Image (cartoon, rainbow, N blue to C red; front, side):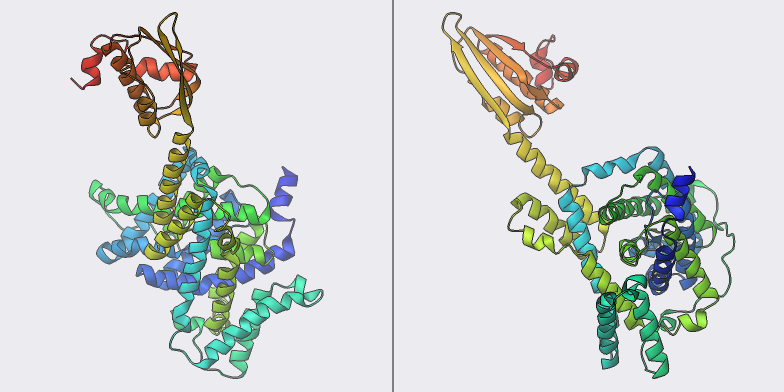
Length: 495
């Protein structure tokens, strides 16, 4: 227990604290921007980011992952806020948390095993593109100072680590932010800063129960939004956990993460914050800056609040160009450049799944839609591929006037038609044996195909015997099959 506590909190103190500062600096403008997207006061996003980061540090299932207010969640809140106001958003946030906790106890985190590597790659590439696109407004219709500062920031980020000793001690994104802020202040450069994003809060968050009627009408208003927020939040969190697992060569408890996200969102809603989830951009910043344990997540939340309340005079001076440089670094680091090379080497179906995931996410700005499209495509390609690995051969025994059909492979909705077409129903034989020793029946479509084959042979006057069904196949055939039941033909024809 003590060893686990040390590993989760005290094994990388310096790296975690420094990474926490970098993440906190990057969280400030994003939290404000996401609040503006959702149509609420900037403090709603800032309070949410503080609360979610602190709570998830203790109850989350993935050390080193950053959770806060996010753009994907903010986009889903726009209509609710516009039509019903902030109080209903807070109520929806609480319900979102409850739904996510329920998902954790139902072990829905295990559903991530159905997300193929090509979908994850598409998700990552789409997110990298969206992160870069989100920086374009800061680089459009601006003075040359912005481009110079951004270029200088990227130079610091990529060149500072090459400096012996000190380059490995201090995270280059933090040096970038501090250096460019100092330059902007010393030379009084007229450039857009964090302070231009919106007014920062000057008080601690307080307990705030949503002022909404506790009745069925309220539930019907917030439930659709809460379901959407819960699904998108868990999906983004699970995908981010997968990516951080790969970056750190560790594993995470996804069901605990589901519950943790729910608890964090309930905490956020009770402190006047909006719903949030894991952030892939900030999580990668954290990992790249040296953060590894829960301490880095806690530090990010605590430093965020301290900066907003104590260092607000300095915080508002940070040029947005510095943060743009950090986010461009994240975009470049997030994109799977190897996936471009793999387009020539990987199967066409894998490439289509990856590309479609990217296109849908970028087109809709909704990660859930892209992942859903990718998962459905991957499932269809898989079903089609497995359906081809089904073979039916036959042997004729003249002495007994018997035809034996040997079925090999998987029989289900994709291969059922091929299964039926493999039999010669017009052949004049007395006996037909269907040997299923090396086959497996998966669904009622397969059972229906077997029924159809048996009844067609019987209609032609042949005696049919089925042999070799394994236990699982026999169970589904006995339960749903009709070929050996009274009125089989009528049942099969739907009468």
